[in-house]
Structures are given as C-alpha cells and as structure tokens.
Length: 164
Image 1 (cartoon, one colour):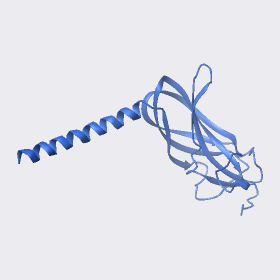
Image 2 (cartoon, helix red, strand yellow):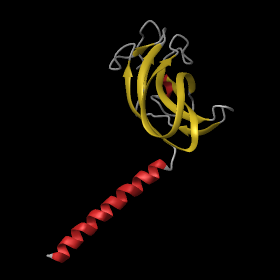
Image 3 (cartoon, one colour):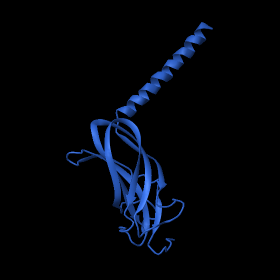
Image 4 (cartoon, one colour):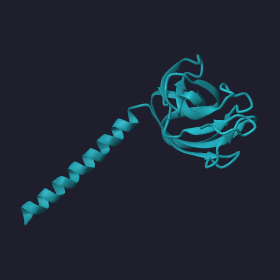
C-alpha cells in the first residue's frame, strides 16, 4: 500500500513539474494567437460589402518575453478573389490598429477597421488578419504572426455582386 501511495504522489509531482515546465516555455517565448473575431459593422454570417469601412472586434492572447514592451499591431490582409480564400502570396495590408504591450502573458480585445471604402482589390476578395511586434522607438518589426487564415471573410464590390 505504501508503495502505491509513493507512486501516486510521484506521478502527481511529475504532472506538476510538467505543468510548470510548459508555463515556463510559454513565458519565455513571444507568441500571439487570435482568439475570436466579431463583426461590429454587421454580422460576419453575411458577406461583407465593400464601399464603406468595416469594423471588427478581435480578441488576442499574447506572450511577450523578449522585450520590456513592444507595439503590437494587428493588420487586415486583403486577398484577391482569384486566391479563392485567404491563401497565397498575393495580398496587401488594408487597415488595422495597434496598442502598447508590456512583458508578460495576457488577453486583449480591440477594434480593428478594414478600409472597405478603398479596397485594394475592388473586384472583391477575402480578408483576414496578421500581427507584428515592433520596437516602439524605431518601428523595427522583430516578430511576425499569421496570417490567421482560420478567420477568413469574403467581401464583394459595392453594389452587392456576389463572388462565385
């Protein structure tokens, strides 16, 4: 019986050490995950129509270990309809926003605006998001994240022509 108790205690300690180790790894890395996207201008179940700016509320989870603070910028990446989604090398930034981020781990919710009144691809296409960590003093980007293609939204030209 004593041997079983020692085994259970030992396994419990191993699990605890593994948990601490994984937390330590997360705290020693720069990470950024997009947790959720909500349409503020209109529900995202609908196709987004170009012709006016479109606002999203996004929630990010982050870990910053390599600097005391950085500028986190979330941008809207626009893909042409010929891409068939949020993939490929042909895309351009068209909107976004940022905030100051201090060392540590956390979650932040923020509004992001797509410049739908001036789409890069006026014939329609797709939009998603990407992020960067940059030095606030020099604007030097030292970490890039995304694009977060699991969040991909179709847009059509003003006038509502559907993309097939």
